[in-house]
Length: 224
Image 1 (cartoon, one colour):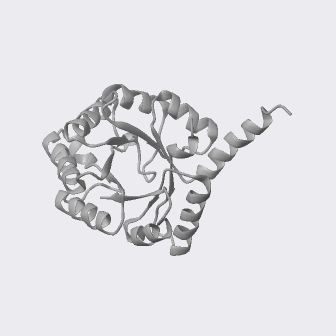
Image 2 (cartoon, rainbow, N blue to C red; image 1 turned 90 degrees about the vertical axis):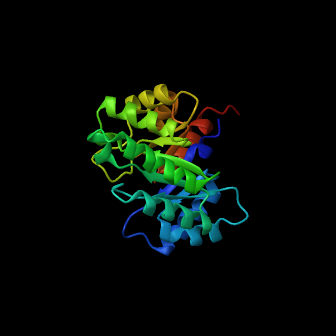
Image 3 (cartoon, rainbow, N blue to C red; image 1 turned 30 degrees about the vertical axis):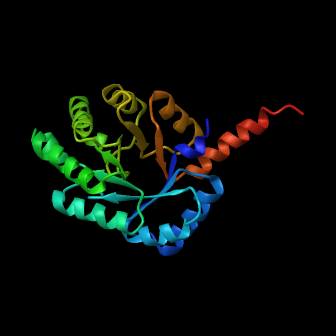
């Protein structure tokens, strides 16, 4: 297993600078991560920095609240793809889900997926705000809308990924979708627990620490 290729090396937030993004991209190439995940404004910079590498550019849509008009999310996705994004992580309308307006949630995801076309779409359901029943419904709606992944968290909610949530999400989507664990995955042990529970991608700002621990474990087990 190549643990590095499970990791979306992530830097999101209101104080991120272009220097931070350049450093993030350099680290991603050095450690062979699957992607960098950056705010939409930094997509062109990340695409330029990663040109010629196999590290993908991922960005976020409707982030972090999800409380944007679906048409805005779709246009945001289209612009990001035009500027070089190769993966899109969108946030659902959590309030609509909680008031059982499932048509809105489904159409929200569907419209963004149509805007993405063949570009991979991950659907952030923000598990910390949901009951288990709501998590199941959110995953089912993502499958129905032809999304590619379901994802636990933005990292801006009151909690992040848990092993139990990953296991539940994997049980619902089966092999139809990927499952991304994001929020609070800070160590090699955290990452491995998520993968064992069914995660196929890890969103983390601690990717270097995660893979460094794996490398240290391998070194300690080597016989000379």
